[in-house]
Length: 366
Image (tube, rainbow, N blue to C red):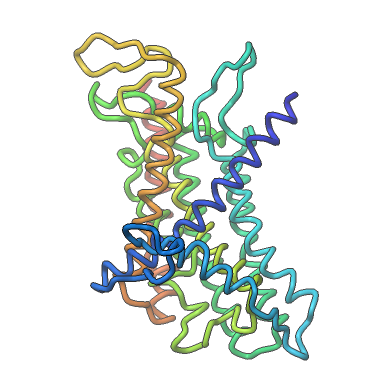
């Protein structure tokens, strides 16, 4: 029975991530149109019977259908096996990392306690860190297997960029591990259900604002999008590491970018913004506003509010990353490396050391 429940949760998480990743394509196209004062995608419609056209048919049906039916072109001197594997290796880690993120508290169904988390891991944060770093292999393999100088240069840029910013991201994660004292992401979320000074939610962002900014910035760099899109950089490298890709393989690379956006949003939500926690809503006591008598709520409603809270927070950070992508200009490569190594790395190290010292002093003072 346990494997069946885990399988259903895992399949559901994968479908949700893929669906949200596809939906973000529409959000980006219409969002960029708003930023640039354009109409955006609005040509295709459902048999012309819709009273309004928001571009859903363009983005979610017409354009993907056109892309997936294009010829799968493979260069004559390319490594065919590596060329085929690279998109899968790039997409797979971005999807499965979400399996360790809790999207709700434990619920009791027919006398069985079910943890709303696809994979229950005591070392969930370590699992996410390990898988998130595997995406670079798909980028490197794509550039090498294409046998194209521009693709190879893009993959080299991508590997250098991702490895550089993963260091700052990893150090920020160490600061959060020190703060929560665990690698279990469900326990991290539960520890954020308390109140600071009896009023303010005890979210991680109030304890670690520096780690939040570093992790969010490094996460955007991991997605390889503006202002960190040097691996693609159309004005210099055509399409970068996937220059020689078309059809479904190109769609996999595009989908992996949006899946990474979802992954970063889920990680930021879980560590810094309470995950599924709703302020003043307790799984046992119900709604408990400061200074007021708790109001009991049905368990199903509490669970729905918690899952909905997690989804809204993730969607907010997804939209924030898309807004950043269409607002800021691209860095030069030297600026990109300087930001990662000379600014973010020292700040992340100082923040980690300061966190360790504060925790040590607090424990000694008890």
